[in-house]
Image (cartoon, rainbow, N blue to C red; front, side, top):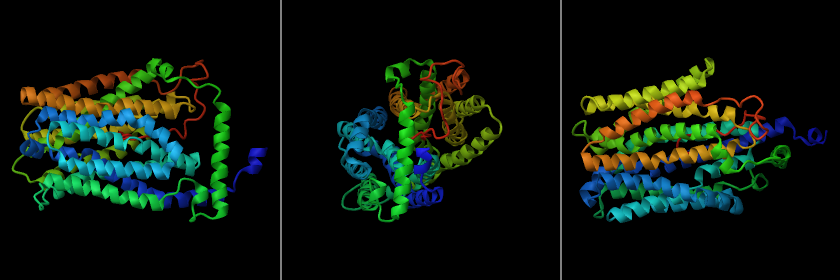
Length: 455
């Protein structure tokens, strides 16, 4: 009875949540866009690094992948510090350091500095995606977080389309004895540094600090979130350790499936511009425009297949179909000339991007809501290691064999294996499972995208 009496007015709460989303979501989407661009712009300068600095395919692949090692190592420490210092201060710090690291990429002199700065960039970005999620938990009731996350994740889709043309155009900038690729890193990194100042002045860490909310709206938000937290703590009598989670065969399957999806996504992300350049005498801006095409197609396909999957319920079958499409596209890209390979990659992108979106409801249905966020973060972290394995392997293959065909075959084979494995992944817990695995409420499970990392 107490909870009912103390519950805020739903109309006031809805009004306050709408204000929060209007105030912070546009900024978060822009932050995600510049974050993504600073992460993947390395794909557009590979040939320039080789020409100007002698950084070969193997070194490029390793450097591209080291970003994800830095990100993985510093993810947990960054999350702990975020909770200590507050989302506003820590998100500002993250943006400043990643912007500075991105700018420093302009002054790479060789392989060693390239490795170091890519690792530092990953370490600097660590905590950004969880930081946004944490911010939502402090500002929005659970019913509103899913909608907010969907809008936030649209930044990844927008960035995947515009990163090519923007980076390609900046590669044509010259002056002050700097190459175009140096200007690209400086300008795109500087955008993040400038944006961090806006973040500091625009965000507050807690609702009671927001001058743009009325006292009634502040009280409604704080009360609603506190009541949800109290209810959640009342059900958290058991907290499985990460070792127990990893021992769960279903969670191991989830990790493998998402790793397979991320492997293909990052293989395409970091190597596609180089493949496009083989299509003809294309300038950097033209390469950037062509690079946007697969991602634009994949975004349309992602939403289309999501609608179909929601109408005809067989989640494993839909994910398997998308993985088969990705495998066929990757296999076909090894046949024919560069133009045919590009068309095949466009087809593959339909599969691996849609698979990424369709995958997450499977673990969400299996997991206890009390541990869902922690396990999904674990799956996302393991999956992001595909961002290290794919470019590193591709680089070594090209360096030693002069071709990435073996890597494309490997991606196709991995996708096919994952398409089979996904049928062994459960979408609901087994009857009679212990309380630590029995779901209580899946409606508000977190749905991160492939960059959660990826962000």
